[in-house]
Image 1 (cartoon, one colour):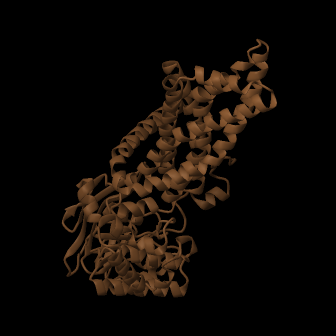
Image 2 (tube, rainbow over the protein chains, first blue to last red):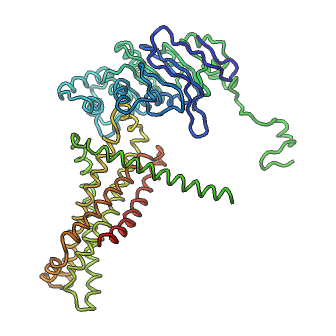
Length: 291
Length: 257
């Protein structure tokens, strides 16, 4: 385990890729939205063939990081390498070629609402290949069967529950046999059964197809239960990495506050403000106050 | 005071920046048009959604506009004893002006707002991001078919608007007010020139089709991906498209006629 955060203030990251070769390598990543700095020198490695989960408080840029790895956003500076290719400098052609080998599962599923489940899953094959329709049909039915939705092939996205939509989106992401899949908050808003199905699918798909999975999630227990490698980011940098067991045993107060959901700690409950007693006793005035 | 001046400057800088972005967006859409050749089905679907589905409102509006035009023109021409020129007045007004302009305005309200709302919702539900992550260019798959469909549909709709308007004028002028049917048609035939009137009117409609579709698609793709953002973008589409149609109509009329 590597710890770069002991007192609540992010220190320089100390990233360890683990034993597996690295598929995604992020180095010295900087990115801002307006005046707000999202990443301030983020370093990150995603080992090949493993399930890596990125955790962190809301607004730390976890989804933004997925979009940057997928080349949908460009960093202000820094280096993002996927399978040896620098994503941020790729032209449209090579970037699209790389994306064909990456799947992404969006929080909403992002299914095309004017197509049935079958046509949604067949969509990438029809767009990028000249395969005969009979073969496309076989490939699609195999993927739908794998996620348990063969019986929903003729339904439209509006007729699916949230969990079914994500399973259909997973089937679509898998249909092109990608080398990696990125999951953006896959467990949000799921009932226990749907959650269990998704967990099992992610775990099974990763091992059966030899994929690399990168999960962004708020759902600690679920994410940690299937992860091989966990990265916690906060305030624009990686603050800790390791296996789930290593993180649970971490001496870092920040990590313990985050993993156990404590309301106060290195990340304070109260936002910085003036002296409470002095303000109540009227010895200090704020806007609209009186002395 | 300084803040107001700075705010005024910022507003215009933002507006110029957005206008520039919309032009780059148009250039990318035009560049994606050749990709429609192997995807002809997409164009047909958009022609149906934006052209055929707008047809009913165009036909009904055209009929009533032609009828009102005949009524007003009859009252005016009667004062000079020139009721026989009713066909000419109705046809020229429709073919040169009202056909393209009202069709453009109706197209903006019906098809333009629908295009913006659809694309805006695709953005809000991450469908556009999903396409990009599947290595499918939204400019080829989503935007270019809609732009070309609008470009093709509006002249056809304008032609049908004018044709139905002429029939409406005939119903009121000839059947109700008693203008001679032969005079109605022969005056029209003698005064409406195919190239100078009909084709120039259709050229206006082509320009309106391009501009309205461009505005509608850009507003959808550029909207804030929330329900409020999509709503605001839809409103902007109708307002900007209507003003553009009216402004461009003046410019084109001044240049062509």
